Length: 216
Image 1 (cartoon, helix red, strand yellow):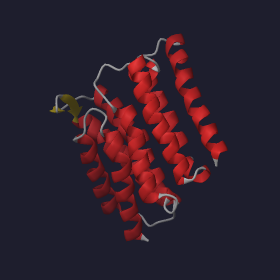
Image 2: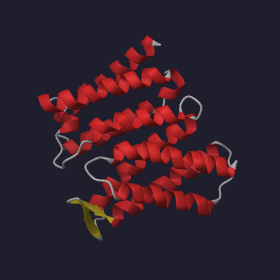
Image 3: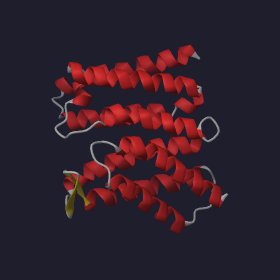
């Protein structure tokens, strides 16, 4: 089991180091380079249930909590840490992954992966669209949110949920899917400072697990 852990650590650290160079070469904004790392690393996390035991995931997550804390303080990994808004999302995301691992792996891989996909894509779409369609803005603890971002999160979650149900060959009851997407949208809307990176993997997995049990 130690070999897959080492391989994943090398893969993720290489991604972080490379993005620092890519950021400089292409003069990327820190927010853009952070998004690339966000999606790439979380898609990698989706493969963990198939190659790692739970303790292996815990080890990687704990190491990355320490690495993120150190590199942020040391001014390293600028592609991830040098963003204008106040956030602890990078540091707290591994904690959410560990909790989701504890509750759902190895028995329920699909719920675990679903939770990661919501953080990977829906959370990202809320941020991207929220900046472009910043109508009906509101503030939570001093940080801006917008109805446009929430709608983008809802649509992305709806698509991911339906896609997962189709893949699992589970009947789609659209009213339940819509209700579930609204619930997760509200969870994302009330979080600031990147704290949704902690709650969304766990809450999304819990809700999807409940939806599976209801419709099977």
